[in-house]
Image 1 (cartoon, helix red, strand yellow):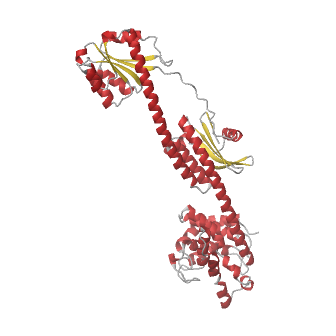
Image 2 (cartoon, one colour):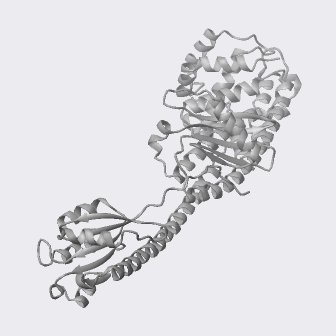
Image 3 (cartoon, rainbow, N blue to C red):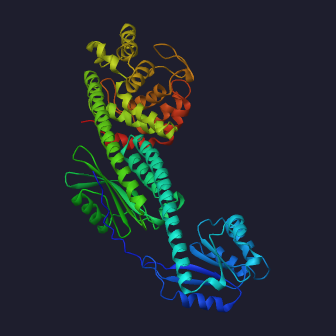
Length: 507
């Protein structure tokens, strides 16, 4: 979908051609300027710069980067001052574009052929032969040559910048495609837009405010915000004005200092990135953002499809977990609480975000093996006898057998958790008497979360414990039943675990 940017770029007043006259005779300056008083090329007049020595010319040339033509005398401070200046311009200053016309009143001091070859001079004139007509012709041909050279160089630089920009687009799109959550998607989107526009990341928060939003069903859902320097995260009416403008026009917009990136999907959802503080966009920037926007729309589609698959997968896992829990009269939100507490602990323990998410998704399957446990054992209100306990101890292995063999990361993690969540840190657990870190970190975390939920809620065989009793139990179980590091993390964050309990109460 083509993008159009609404900014109206003011047409700048045409800058004049800069001509530098380097000559120690003041009359030469006046005569030259008078002779060319009405000169124009491409509707541009001439602006003169004057130097009366080679050293003055060096200072001017060091500060002025777009001098089109240099009229250069040979004999000034020294007999070859002009020639040495020409050499300095081409070699030391690296200026290959300005046209140099050598003017001398003493032709013997600088033979024409040698000068043009050795000093990269563009034209050679004796002062006596430069009448008004010849001066006009010389200036016209020199400025036209400079104009054509600059146009070629500008086109070359544009192509180089465009090629480099396309490389950044490819890299940026790849980075955005890697994101698997909306928050990270918009964070990545912001970072890559900054990269495309070559804005320093270290100063972004001081220069730019904005937000990332998803538009669906006539409403905006703010996913991420970029605070201004006073920490104000509120969404002002101006932001909504520009977001609605992009939705109405169904395209990205750039107006004043506001850029709104419009990234549609094949569903009814649209992602938008609002940035305030973008000072300008070049033609290259506009084109690169247009290409990037098309790629981002594909990334957004992929993200939505991925989220749909993950959410469907999570719902199926929760429903399957609910079936198991309902058989043991543990209906309600046990598996949701347990998976959320597991996720919280994983984050606090420093597991990578992807692993913490995987654990959260897989944890509800921990007791899937109970599907084969007889009701008379599963629903028994009192303590199980030896044989009943041995039957109950089979459920981790049964769960593992159900889940093993899959190459899906969630089911592989669920198989591990199912088999190992009743192992004990001191090696006295079941079914395989694993010890310490031989027990997978997922299973050690789930064991702590599962025990916490079991103790803080009523079961068919017991009443809910007080938080004080639960804390005392964890202190006693640390290092034998449960991993001491994970227990310590639970005790340090027990308030967060209680908040999860309060959020997902049993019905």
